[in-house]
Length: 113
Length: 113
Image (tube, rainbow over all chains, first blue to last red; front, top):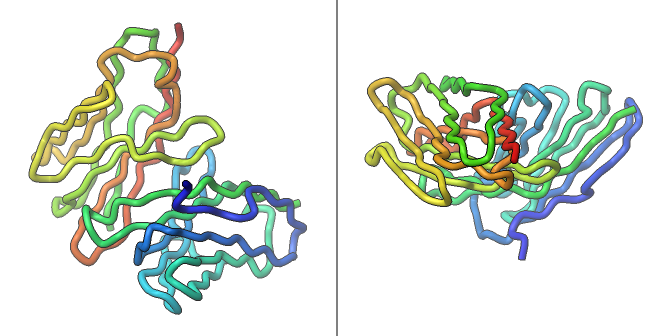
């Protein structure tokens, strides 16, 4: 059974609209992460969290907010979606052992028109 | 912060050939190293991992070599087959309280029969 799930798996949004991407993990991991993947850029970290009700900025947080209401759930929020936010978004979780080895969800393909 | 450079961005080989993907990193305190495989349209799956205290890890037809002196990590495939066609990403972690992985930009491997 999948340990990290994401919803929706794909979404088309309009410019200026609000988008919420959701992630759920059953690994009992403390850490959760949001990345975006663009061709030629690999994976870039947007936000991460190590405990419920707390989030940390990653390397490219501008234009994104995150919410961690529980250990299992982590959301990424685009308050005002822009064309440049068209990408594939991956959620991941990790425990505190083995260098924070990360387990990834299936990804969400977001298209902003 | 840590920077990881991955080469080459694209690699095309014939079935049965060898293939080598290399990552160089900057932080001498990096301790955990990972290789992820991403098949087209899919998520990232952990392929192999190696501690700083070990220098070689083998499995699934791949060998990971770590040269701490040169801060270089390589993924070696001795006999490629079409099922190995995918994108490969290296990732580096300092461990300790640093919960973030720094990813290379990826290598797209194509194996032709």
